[in-house]
Length: 256
Image: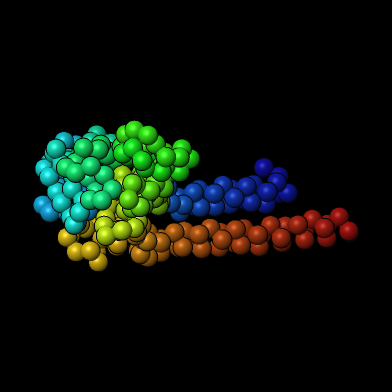
């Protein structure tokens, strides 16, 4: 290797090392198989609580039954279970003043891939206004994510609600947004780990915390990423010094 080529080789090596460090410091989106911490709940805060917690690599856990909260009931029975990829929730539901009672309309939610854009559908009754469709004249399944609806009687809700962060996907089959049952969630699935991990209780105040995507707190992974990035910048600066000196020597030799 010639004397003049050596600085360029050093720079190329430094750039390659920096790229490796920065790639290692970048967070990746959750993808199957999801890590431990996935969970499924038929009715958030319902009594009794129908929920399954899913350890990684242990599909098959199942919780089933009828659960109620205020004027909302799921049953026939409703189920929360772990699957090979993550988890799902499904069953029949009713909302007092908005749908037929007892439960007769289907709901389902499940995370089947890292984008969360499939894995759920909800039946709505005749007379429901569905955004993008209009007022339906018969029981109609809705599978489009984040669809706003107004049930007969005026209750509003978001169907197939999807929220994504770097480590997980959260799906709510139904989140009621108005009326006496506002804030109630039917068919919630968390695929991957959310910080803090959502906990279901009958308390109305805690339901809002479950519905909102939790923001990851700063942890050791963030500190490690900062250290790696700082090391990469330092490596580039370290290589630039001898490179600059070599270029200066070449210019001096050319001038003489």
